[in-house]
Image 1 (spheres, rainbow, N blue to C red):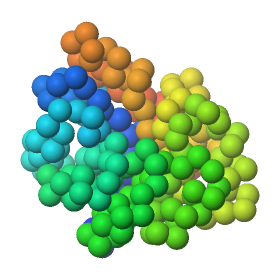
Image 2: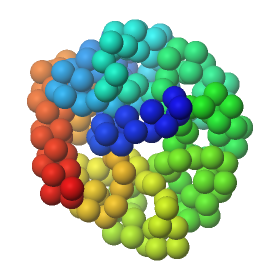
Image 3: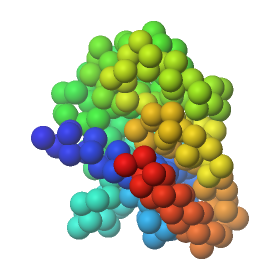
Length: 217
């Protein structure tokens, strides 16, 4: 199934880059720089101007590499989710849970990762077919909260976003998350046009992730 394949790609990618940008060009260059650094997961946010066009260009550019997965972030409603899917998004991420978006994603067999802060929100998201919940903002909790959430729901798959860094990457994975979302410190150099530095930081994340993966195997 396509949905299962995409979920496996997400967890194999491990570190998903949350790409924002002031322009279509900045978001495209940043995404290419991130993939050049070895990252396989891109979450292009719909705060980027002409985000659907960026998605279309990225999915076309990397369609020959099955290990790369490109999805849409900051999706607030079902209409935006459908627009993203038509543009080629392989997964949909929201800052909060939205029932209609969940139903639309289920209908088209696209993974939906809604932002949740409480155990109640997570349970609701699971009830509407979310396979992975986005712990957002992760900075409000820290890695230690994962164990607390998984105690009553050990089957819960969590992707923290916000507050994930090179320094605490290992702590999050040791706590039991299936993947993480990173944005701020990864994308910061893009704002000044230093895309080589974006590639360098992406490579650092992937080197760290591969080490953690071996340790936890």
